[in-house]
Image (cartoon, rainbow, N blue to C red; front, side, top):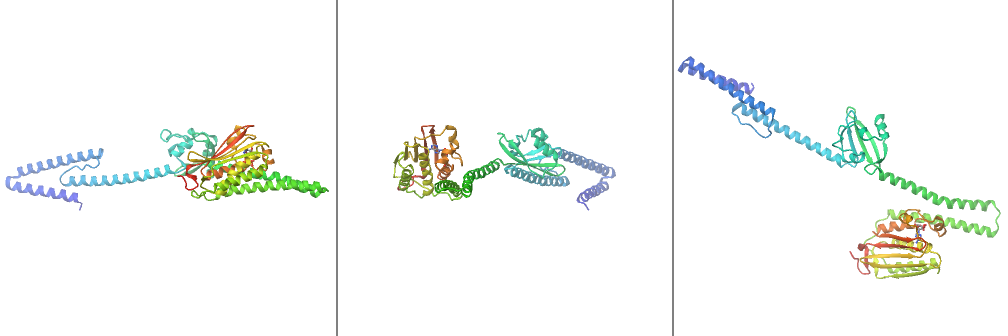
Length: 437
Ligand code: ADP
């Protein structure tokens, strides 16, 4: 039998027995009055606690257990245990929910949840940025009232979400490219995922441009070469014409060779391990080599002066650094008309090593300077080609310098000359005995 029934029956039986004893001792009237009194007390007690329980259920105070004797004490205690269990469950669900939200917030993708009327139920911070939303203010707003791009509105209405939608001109700067996809779930609800693919698009277009540029660069000499071949096969040529044609063919093929050589250098630079930071270059040998090559290339047509501090050196890859510095000296000679001057210096400026090439050549118009290190960028195509240029030299220089944490600075005045200076950081600069850190 239930404990409540048992207790009630026991107390009624006790009251009955007590009343009978009182009746036998003091008479039936007294016994009846006693029984009635006890029943009234019992009813008042029950009413008091029922009222208390009512109030408690109406406005529960968590953690407080009202004290009461007997059955009511037991009821309050059980109620308290139940509330405690629920409270723990609610806290657990809250914690899971907040971990889930933190997880979605940490995602690099934008996430928007729509209800069955395409109204925003929730969105994370990335989606706010991508779509220009406000997670609090825009709640329950129809998504197409806020994201109005016709492509998006059409996509959402189409109900065909197998394909990704590309949206351009997005984000706070209106320069982002987003890939957007909708995933239906539940009862007519939708999950929108956005992904910022601006960088991906940029590298993809750079790759396309690069392939187009390489093809274009190789196409011209190839066309010329095959033209010569055809002429030689079809026309009867005397010895001197034949030699002239062969010489021109040789020029074109060496142009292609140079392009392929520079492309391979660039590819190797991109793939190679970082240059060592503790291996000192034999700068004296590098500078002598540079001076010798410069003299040979100029063939006495320029006044070349080398002013160098031979005790100064840097840490890194000698072949790479030599090729970068040689490129700058070669350019100075190639873009300086005969009779011009070229000054090369290698000096310590404060705690850094600075290599500087100044020429009195053609100079570079200011608008071209920021683009000089782009692959295949040339200020004057025909001059670059005439002097055997590939348009890749300064791109290689930039790569090598980046790998050695060095900077390139270019100043130039059209018609008066240019100065290319390379500054190696203090961490790579050293005297001949130790590296200065
Ligand atoms: P290129 O093989 O055409 O010389 P570079 O990458 O070495 O390619 O140089 C890019 C362009 O920068 C050159 O085409 C040239 O127009 C310009 N340039 C580089 N160095 C000099 C310089 N010292 N004086 C004038 N123009 C220069």
